[in-house]
Image: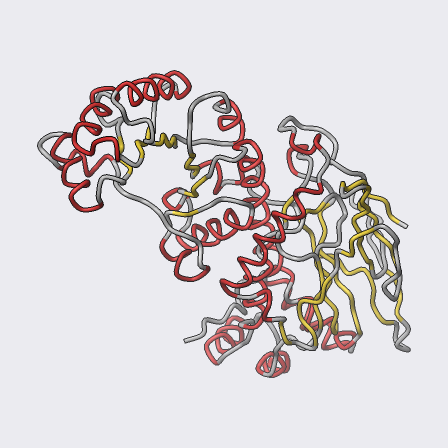
Length: 432
């Protein structure tokens, strides 16, 4: 059964719709734009994620009998609007940055075109998906940058809402994480899954040795053994004695990690387990990962900090009307003039200027038709045309494409973009 997304919205989206249908302005052609006024936490760049999920959610934005009945009972909208919603499906067009793309302040990451009525009610759905997924992808990208060539696994399912855990795994994978502990993310989005045992498995057995032996018997000597339930060094010795030098890895989830990791590496080498890897977890963020750069760590697992956006759980995107038709059909640029929230009206196009393959500027051009900008990469692609989503952005194939795209474009960043300290965006934004 297809689950409707129609009520994953704020009431005022529908009350605006109701009033616009009453006075006849609901049919006016409109252009809405998604952008962020600034980057959270003084970060140098953002990573767009959630686009594929959004396109599927827009397809399911339909009002069935249950939704319509509830809206009528609650008096949210008039009976005439209930009838209008019964036939609703988005028939307009959506364009924007590809999923996995980098963005900067005022980057027009998504543009929605249609009648005011059909486009305005998508606001909350669009923002709830893009804000959460992009916040996690941005945090994940910083962790990937700090980790260098060492792989990271996403392990945050127990630290967030159950469905948010799946989307977090997806966003982290797009930004460069190699695997997830979440099985639904593996089934739904094709993210590689991993995991062996928690401390409870060791505590279940009469001894740590018995727990290790049971895990080795079940998974083979190449498994990863958790060695910090009791005494780390004793556990390392037991692990190597039971699995031999073929022991795949040991995981450390507590303690002064730089000190403990160094001691464990030395002891593994002394025992002849020179090929045994060390993975660390323990509430890692990009700063903790960077602090372990000189330690003999082979891989990381990040969970709590990652699914919370590493302190910034929203990307700060807003959804604003930037152009609409007058009564005679003439399109007119519109924008807020509020203090500190003033916008720029008009349909926009975006380009990434490059010099020798390195990004130098985010150029945004206000124009009715797409202009030509030399020595630049065009950032806007069609996502939905006449209500039909481009299948290239959907499902597990769309996730892989987004991951590959992100890996390419992140290489365009100048070196200063990798700084973890707060500061100006890695490249300036120019509006023309």
